[in-house]
Length: 445
Image (cartoon, rainbow, N blue to C red; front, side, top):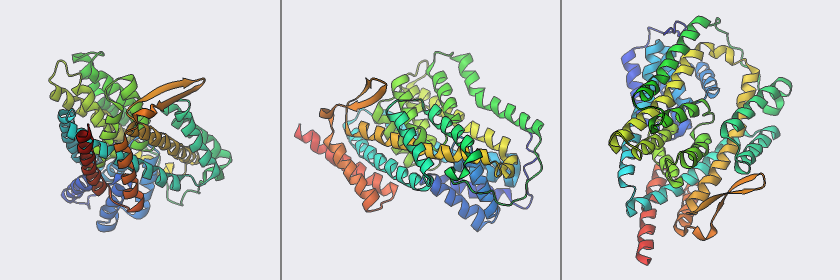
């Protein structure tokens, strides 16, 4: 592995660096905005290891990449300060605490899933997730849709997914290609601004880049090779690894953007989960530190737990969670270690910035589709895919409306939009409310 361009500084004490990122890893709640703010406070303001301009350049660079931008930013900071070992340490310390917590919660979820009281608690959590996703839609929309063209892209993306059920990768990558084309002739449609006048570093070595790509590609596929040799392509672990490797390449826009696509595949194509269990997984991920995309680990755990042969269910679940986490985050290190030396040059790539701006606008439509998908599966117990001519719709059975979910969703909306409660407080309150309503419903039967 060659990262000779990684501007390592001997002035930064590695032990202090490790302690800082261990603390960030355990305290990185609140989604990417909170995580980035936490890193900014520690790395830029408190320790002054990276200046403001470098931090913002790196953040913009990470937005160009698939995967969780906060974890990639942490990896870049480590690379910038301590080279390869720093990048690995920062990236792993950002992910491992949340992955351990998520593994524990998924294990408890799998063991208690058939209990009535547990289902009642998670009905409240589903209602909280619905409000959280709606809040994310509003926040991202306010920030991203600052031109008519971007608004049209968002609406088109929503309709393409909701009415025509087009593949998620086609929608977001198509928007990115369109944005690159528009950026060349009408950058004002995307509100593109000139790149800041920063010094451009020497051109990185293509030979070093090639070595980095080959090494990290090998690391990425290594567990899949073991699965292929030991278990074969018919085992659920092979399907898990292939699916989440594909997902890692198209996770632009964060976990919310890919969740509906992931749910569709996991529920309808593979049969790993029930529709409501995806909302449960996101509720668990909201309570853990680290990237929200750790919700994928919940899916991988349940998929393997329910088809464990030749392992026990718990061993299979742990293997499924570990494989999912590996193939989700190994690509992040590949992107950073390969392209970080190009960061200053990419700031001047107008077409790339145009593609990113259009893709971000399309993600708003994707999250709107996710909001509708969640609302249908939280509020109704039966939702049926229905084809009407060229339209592919998911229509609820109106008689299956769950009054408890309706009440809890109204409470969640009041807490988020009226009272401005934080995530933990709201999740706890709605879990208790779900338990109470579940007891009332059982008593009335």
